[in-house]
Image (cartoon, rainbow, N blue to C red; front, side, top):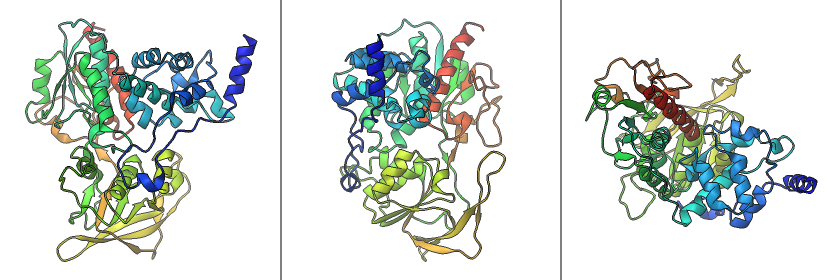
Length: 469
């Protein structure tokens, strides 16, 4: 036993196993996936670094409570089929999570190896297992015998998909209502092909469909049916509609031709397939593109614009790099591809020609104040520091809010001043009895995995609700 511990300790000292990527000068010209995943040999080497802690803190950092030491142990035994089954016990979207979850601030942040070195690459190992399973055709899930209870899930993004999958496994009859023509929510329309191939998204959705979940697309709740009508038809309702209404800055020139919200821009790129030359998607392919914002959505928009043929793409952000909410990996990839970062800079107006086409963005330099009581540093303008950046396309990526259409014709659902639904943090229960909510429609724009975590809590709470607890 001592020899095994010594071997584990020795393996743990090794550095993180690198993952192959497309070279930056090649990938900036295509929409193929940037990161190429682990080989079998890579996965075995990286899995061997895990110490198999008796009290695995990494699981505490996972919003969907994946048995991380359990599936890594199975990888070490080369039981990849068993590993993916272990993951799918609690996570219905492993190929997605392995690619886009911010593991560095969640499960990997709790890995004990990270205290003195590099944590185990949990996300990369999860992706390996999911991709291995998909290549083998995937095991068809067992369908639980249905009860008479019916649940309507509004929205097919990460929160809705997770809630639906968990409820289906419990034996409930679930129908997902999606407003767009393809399921997936932000996974389909928001995240670019080079980060999350749409084939992967559809494979994950097909797994949930095989669990017995029914999908109704092109179905807008608030138009075709009100929430109240849905409530009368089903035994419980879950709202996972996300935050699809874009926010704007309110500066002059935002109505000019060539100004996009990040939502519209990325929807045209992803769902409407502007990335694919075979599709004649209407989108302005600017030569000088300015993206306003510092989150993952801003990185996605900027890197997509570059791949659409832009000569120069700038990210304009009013704070510094340390304050940027985007993942460090996404920032690094953007820099490698040649995206220009104009930090401590804020747009004050968009300039155009007589035909209202964008010509430039007028900006002002900013400086950071000392952190406030919350620890956040506000930015203030530097007087007399105005300058302009040439631009023929501007993308505003400063956040989103819930779309109010979902609430039309319904009563009794409490919302706060920001338009998000008021729901219990642990159960997703809303002010309307039998209606639950989770994800961005409750929290505002957040991560995919946090929405999935909310979906799992709501599924459990709905089950308890049916049992009269």
